[in-house]
Structure formats: structure tokens, C-alpha cells
Image (cartoon, rainbow, N blue to C red; front, side, top):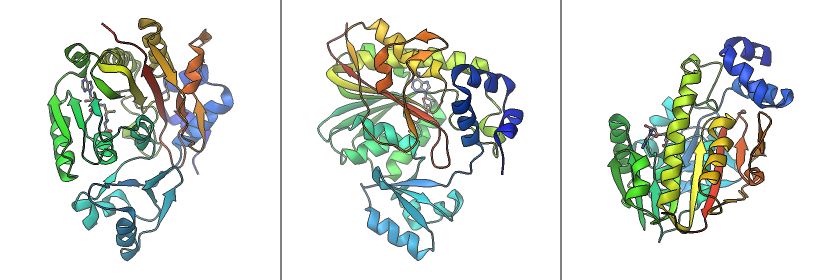
Length: 323
Ligand code: SAM
């Protein structure tokens, strides 16, 4: 059983130092403990091709045990099979299930795209959330999905095709330009931003934290600011923007939101996230002794644990047109 002490020794010193600067000691300990867990594989049923009953039957036939998820009827936690074994299932080969972490299923559930909506996904590959939104919209309405990286863009196209998604138009392009090209246009905008990945660390997988570096955070901050600004410009008045990351770093989360609130004074409102996720916390309203906008408490933090990757979600409503 790995301990907090071992996490402190194994993870980059600078990261551990920052963790205890940002968070009270007990919470920092809890985060480190979360990195010592072995997470079970999780999957989402692709409701464009299958329903949960059919998938549970196939799992039972293959002696694969699973748990349901209280807050999402289409998610399953797999108890006794690896991701590799799940990839051998017929359901996987036919695109009826998608392997996706529980935390990463949250942004579409919070954004709630509807069948008649026009949706923009500004950082889309490999397409987990794009395809989840397409399923929630029953392949109706329209999703514009943007990905800058050519190889990841191909993966996005492959995954959408495999899952029978037909309401998405993809672009291999820089999402930060879309706000100016399509101002005040979209009902819902998702920014699942590139980040330092601090929510994904696992002590058992050196590759999850080996490339962590202060420079990675500095670079991510620039892209996060640009993508979120683009999202705000692209949303319709009355439209909603969901900003998410798989990092626990407040600089990449609450501080980015605070900066965009200051950039568009009076034009954005933080909408309270009502989903009840075990072990989740409200967003921070103070970072390193700096007071942030008090409504940041309406955003949602997920602390890394046995079932969850560390994650952050913030839902913004655009109150008036931008120019
Ligand atoms: N939403 C995806 C999913 O659920 O499968 C995961 C997105 S991942 C966290 C962030 C993605 O943003 C990466 O694929 C990265 O290549 C892409 N990206 C980075 N900068 C971008 C930009 N300026 N415009 C569009 N995509 C960008």
C-alpha cells in the first residue's frame, strides 16, 4: 500500500511544494493519497448504438463484473477486467461502448446540449466528450468540433465514425480563432482545455507525471486564456460555456476564469453546478492569498481518488452580446 510519504518522494519536488502552497495540508495529503490509488477502468455506453441493458448482458456473458454510477445511468465501473480485455469485446469493436474516465463524462452532463442546439467544441480530440454530446443530442442539431493537432484530429474522426456520430462537422484548426469568425453564434460551447494533467497522476505510472514542468503550466495558461476568450465570443447571448481541465492546479482553473470575468465585466455569470459527485468540492475563491470572484464557489473541483481523476468544471452563462 503506497502512502502519502511515498507520493512526496516520487513526484516532482516542485509540484509537491506547490501543492502545499495552494491547499491546506490535509487536502494536499488527500490529493497525494488519491495518486496512490489503482483506478478501475470505466466506460460510457454509446446510446446512439446500444442501451445499458444490452451492454450489461454482454459483460455478464464474459464474466466481467461492474458497478453502476449513481449520477449517470450510461456509465459503468469495471471491477475485474483491464482496458485491454474490454477492447476485445464485440461491443467495443462495434463502437457501442467508449472507454472514458468518470471525471471526463462530467462536462457534457453539466453543459446539457439539447437536440436542437448548435454546439461548439473547441478542443475536441480524441472525441470522448464530442461523441457523448452527439449521443445526448440523439445525432440531431449540430456540433462544430475543432482540434489543432493533425494526428489527434485523425483519431477524433476515427472515433466519431466508429460511434456512428453524424451531427458533427470537424475542423483541424486553432480553436482560439473561432470566436472572431463566428461571434455570438452558439447555444453551448465546450472548452476542455489542454492542461498540465495534474489530475491524472498515478504513482504506478511514471509516464503520468514524468513530463510535468513549470513550463508546461506556463504554456497551458496561454492556450487556456485564448481558447476561453474565443468560447466567450462565440457563445450566443444566453448561451452557456463549459470550461474544464484534468488538472487540480488553481492557476489553470479558478484563476483563468477570474481573468476572463475581468475581461468581460458584467457579461458573464457563473452558474452553480448542481451535479452531486461523491468527494467533490466547490471551486476556490482565494488562491495564494489573492481574493478571486466569490461566485467561483459555483464551479466544481474533483479530488483524485479511487474512482475519479482530478478534474475541474466551470459553467458560465453569457449575459449579453460581445464585440
Ligand atoms: N475533449 C477531448 C475529449 O474529451 O476527448 C479531450 C481534449 S484534450 C484535454 C485537449 C485537446 O486540445 C488536445 O487534443 C489538444 O491537441 C487540443 N488543442 C490544444 N490547443 C488547441 C487549439 N488552439 N485549438 C484546438 N485544439 C487545441
